[in-house]
Length: 296
Image (tube, rainbow, N blue to C red; front, side, top):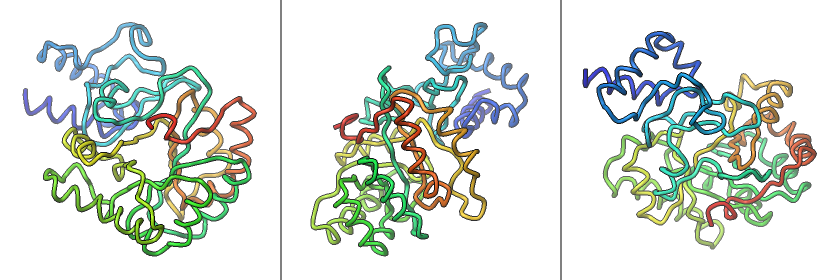
């Protein structure tokens, strides 16, 4: 039973939506396993709700995620315009100076980009951000700083924050010792200092959203705040880019108060639509604020 439950929770955290989990095990099997897990653990860490939406956060399904579930960061969207449910609650993450959204009814959002390499899309993205006077956060890997110092400098000059996405983009959940963790982080700091002459803002995003509690503790120990996200879409396949309509369907339909939005700066679709996207968000009444206003 112990092995089965462990396997179940690992599988659950790897699914970004409940429907994906249903494809993994079948809806009936999922309900049965979840019931057995709650019964066996006797703690209600995983539970089946007879009334989805009752007694759970807005946007949740009838299923509560285990507190601080580890593995791949995942989200469950149930209602457009409402915050999704994450692998861990905002309250659990806050203990580690970690965030995936802001708990607010105010129409604000926080725009972030992950940058692993350059393919010509970053400049038009920066142009659109400058046109709308938007300050974003770019989470970059170390090799990006080495290969694109001019773009890093422009990000800084335009008032954006450059965050830490590690040097090699590894699965950080597999790193259990502080020395190895520190090396992945501080090598990026050193490269940033060499290019800009400034100290890097201590904002960290785990590559691929892979994490565990130890990672969060180590990041905090190094003075970092960790940022996941509450809205993203499949924009990272360079040779299979979403259409404008597909992008707007997700980025307009699922935007919600307090959202941390993750986009990839390698996306040609993002580069093409960002000016209009920012306009559409503004027309919906949203203000786009820097992460510093969420976490300091």
